[in-house]
Image 1 (cartoon, helix red, strand yellow):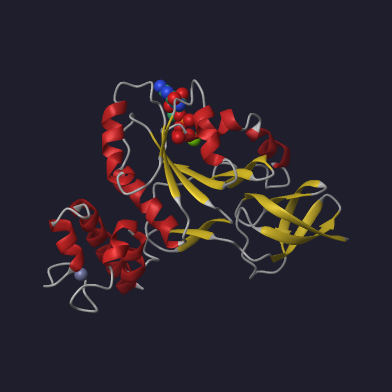
Image 2 (image 1 turned 135 degrees about the vertical axis):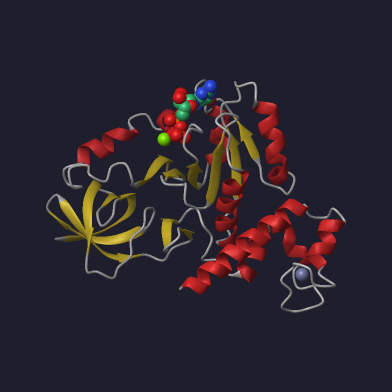
Length: 292
Ligand SMILES: Nc1nc2c(ncn2[C@@H]2O[C@H](COP(=O)(O)OP(=O)(O)O)[C@@H](O)[C@H]2O)c(=O)[nH]1
Ligand SMILES: [Mg+2]
Ligand SMILES: [Zn+2]
């Protein structure tokens, strides 16, 4: 048995693949209480062809999402979120915004990737994204079938969580950036319960020493019930200058007099649709909290 450190590059329910100086190692976790997430840097003991994760090193970040029942950590040590959308099939602006809000809550910056720019609906998609580009989120446009080069400068130096609704071209992007990405899963499928979990796991792909991309499935559910009203308001970056300036300290930014956010929406300083989204998400959070 020898002590090692490494980074978790694939996370299944209770099994992991860890990249160490000696190569990739299938690992289990010591005990029941240690929580391990893709992207974690860990200390482990090697035992033949397997390893046992004994501790998780301090995380630079931890991204969460909720579903109707619980909050789950998606990935650790991510430095940037990239949301993939396409002109066709149509994408949900609300879902895109939910992902970005979850990242903002963890102080992780986001960027937008518009894929399939070879399609004629591209100008309309760019127009829809203006709600987010206008408040500062960068947009990278590309056609992954032809060339993913426009994406490389945006990824460089970051650990990027790549996320997107199905059909947007996320797999095409990953497979072009990382030819052979599927091989690892095949190689380790036996150690990982004969590949039973291969469709639902999170993966970290390394481009170079400073650059990695995390691929996480299951975006359909991306609730923000783990954000209370204050955290949620703060996650809307363009609201920040106005927060704390309402007449009432506990202002819900609904119909109260002297609400600085409502004034800002009326004056066109923030987009009314973004304030509406805040209200929608705040109500969902309140209802979820009452159910617990
Ligand atoms: N026209 C066009 N189609 C693309 C592009 N990238 C991916 N696709 C197609 O979009 C479909 C969904 O792609 P896929 O990568 O599986 O999407 P995912 O569900 O997000 O992983 C496939 O038929 C791809 O061939 C692109 O740049 N242009
Ligand atoms: Mg896919
Ligand atoms: Zn207010």
